[in-house]
Length: 88
Image 1 (cartoon, one colour):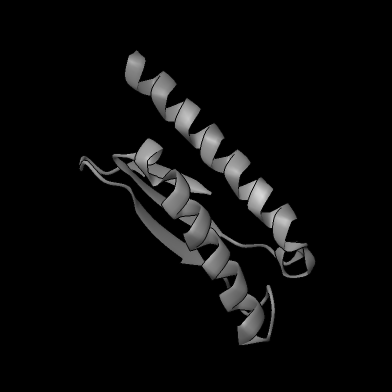
Image 2 (image 1 turned 90 degrees about the vertical axis):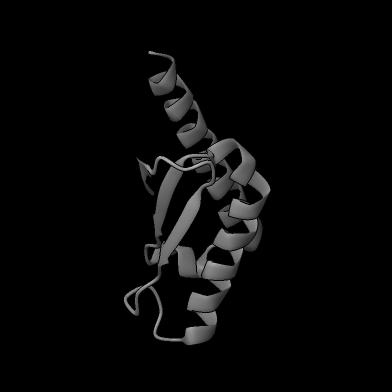
């Protein structure tokens, strides 16, 4: 994940899932749906950020719940990092 301040009141999301992750579109789309779903759940805490999620090949074979928990952990880390930087 990459994050950058956007100077807005909302968070924006970009998703990159290349064919290196999977040649099958159904696999790439499953990953993108999961990223969007977890982003929607955490979006209120990520205000003012542009976020880009870049999927890696292991995400193709990972269990649904494993990916969901990994994404939640990343959102929390980003939120804490941004809260810490805005308080200085």
